[in-house]
Length: 307
Image (cartoon, rainbow, N blue to C red; front, side, top):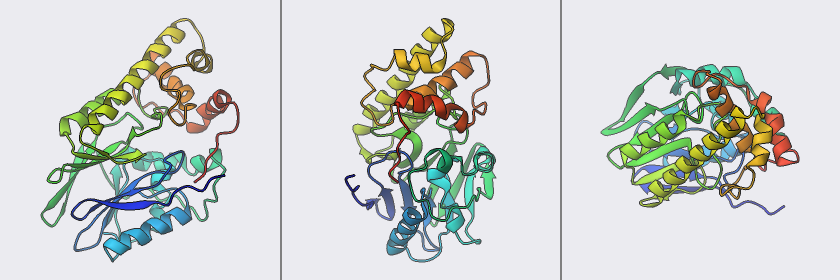
């Protein structure tokens, strides 16, 4: 197996850093560091103990001291499995549904994606929660936390730095990979993307994949919106014909998005689409382990993870 390139800490604007982990596949996410006099603000953690220790070391290189706070953009394990490594004095912030779903999910992501050596992992949910939005003030730098879910999950939060026009999008944006909507809302996803457009960021850090700048941002949002429309069309055709999600995914396997990473997500996304077509509210909980077998079947083998 070819070794992955090492993570890279890149300064996007003075005191604002993206921590980008190639290759952006399952459990290999991006995080952020915002420098402040009282200690860094972290945007998400990552999946394994080793990756989290590397993240914290990189953050300490640009801003020594205990993290002032940690924001979770949503509940998934690749963004929260390092929460336990925060000092007890560091508040962890997230949407109220993020806390609920971190507790409900436990370590299920590590149970279905068994390839990595996760090391020590403990469940620690956010201990400061909000509903609509919240603004943090790092000196004279505001950091806006904006809930836009259900979309990728019920708890998606944008981390927006309006003065610098830098956006940490969490997993609302996958650059190079198929979005994963099984635990969020297919109907809500384009609305969340539209909210990103309204902000007009100049730099956007996706949850997975390379940083996007300038015209790359609306181009990616266009592609992601088109993907959601594709999933919706497939779901409507096959749901009305009484075909189950896996059969629908197989019938639509030859599509223009098939070359994006994690094409097996189509099967999981169709479960979400079917739930909404059945009349269930957006964000109705669909446990990850209940859709995973169809994703494995669509993939044709156990789903690999190189984190």
